[in-house]
Length: 166
Image 1 (cartoon, rainbow, N blue to C red):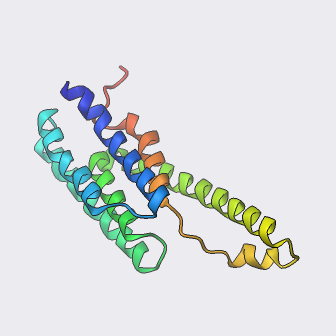
Image 2 (tube, rainbow, N blue to C red):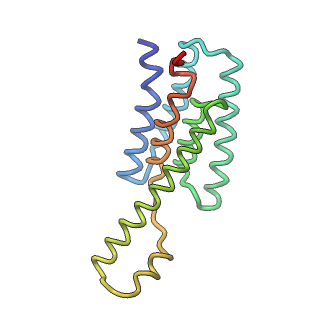
Image 3 (cartoon, rainbow, N blue to C red):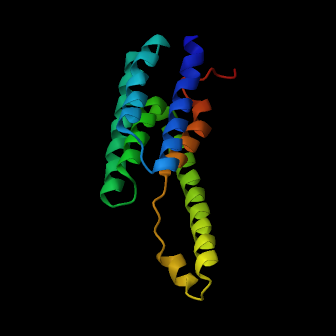
């Protein structure tokens, strides 16, 4: 039962956060807190060494600092920064790079899809030659929690929580 919970809890919670962000452009603080705080009992129950828990925590703090740097430049929302750090806690150093790469790639795809969708919507409504100006000036609120959820799901098989295929 613990093994099943360890393998499904984070994916379920990041999908819930991504869905919330997609529907409301907000990731509730309580959900980020649940993701972060659930790590510690799951780590203890699955026998993660204390040293590994420490390094997972350091990884999360580094991701939080980077996330808030991106937030301060207006490149990432505050909830997204907190979600990245909370999920980063579960990934730790060994799986952090794949998680961030998958998240970045998913974010790029999401941004392109949303931009195209918005331009189709604008063009359908307006039907004028100035659509190219809007294309290059368009800045939408991007539900980056969706990309974080996708990155988390894609990178999760390479984590402590999943049994190795050896």
